[in-house]
Length: 239
Ligand code: PGA
Image: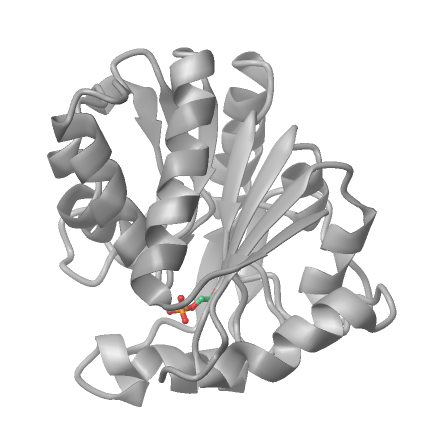
């Protein structure tokens, strides 16, 4: 595990973007798995800059998103489809047919989850997983529980997560209660993990993730078991 403390959020984002872009430059057919939320926004912005400066092209890259809310269509402004379009895909040269996000509006969610796993397997698995953590230790929407999830499936959001994500919606009641989410088992098969962590409300989960026991009660702790994790974090002074 490589741990890099940066002076602030902007530096964390630039360093992480450079690390990810270097992987894509080395392997243009790189398969990426990507998060949403506030934490990676700066990294996505920095990736846009690196693309515009000619450092990297995503023309042959493939992306899979970690999760999507159940019940939101791709054109809903709160969906992660919309988030990815706005924050990253519109800023780089990735080809739309190489981007995959679970369909949270699928009639048969279980079938959609299985098809998503098969699609990941069909391209040879994930090369680089970009990941953040929730204040409760979740990764993606894999919430604290009695066992680590293995594969993509339908998950229920915890009260903590609903409360934390209410800031993206009109009010808490509008936050979907379920999501389709890639399993911890699938995440752990990524060849490399680039992990981002910033903000006061993450400090405790981050310390527990690094130094506490590996437990599904803090899903991020599983990263202790991965052979190639590169962590970029701030000093947690910012909000
Ligand atoms: P945030 O959430 O980046 O919006 O803080 C990350 C997460 O909950 O996984």
